[in-house]
Image 1: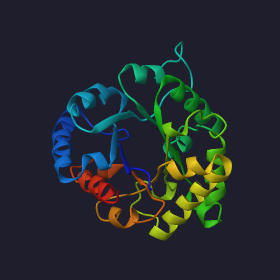
Image 2: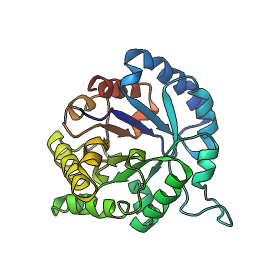
Image 3: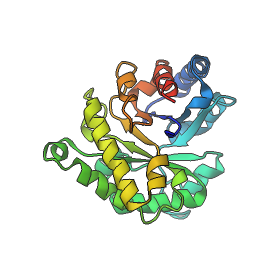
Image 4: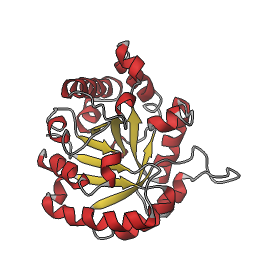
Length: 254
């Protein structure tokens, strides 16, 4: 039996009070177009918009996530938001390891491991992002890069039920370029094989592996047909009412 489909919406540094108040009712109304019980949906606004999003999506099946958390605990860390603070706000999810954190803010694999430890200890579930840059794909290193990024967290994860993996080829994020269904399936299968080898067959079978990278209503239907694609982590398209169409495609695959 395949894992329950999962769709995440990463709003990145986008959104305003006005735009969220306009979008949320459309996404809540969109729940009528798919089986809400057949798919998990999580949306990640900016830190400052988390309480507003909680209010706007209250009563729906759409859960709210942070986009990141600190690798530290509380203390003299100006600008940092700890995992405990996120949990205290009533949230159950955070994204970690996004390529923009890795490549723009120079976060290392060791940083990601430390964050996973803090997030899990706080009781958060984690959407953990991995993926290769264009030159790494062109030189045949995709599986190696993904394995190295996974190697950082395998020793520290306490419960794999808390982890969703998001494969996001860096060259496809926000570029309009999308991995072919063959490329997506090949890499997702390699990630699942990695989990089977390094963790357990049970974890490999049950862990949801999402595809991210210019997912939109036009390409999600084909991508979700890949046997090892369990859903999506969506960027720009999650800021539009048509995000519902992507959720519906995942729900129909259940």
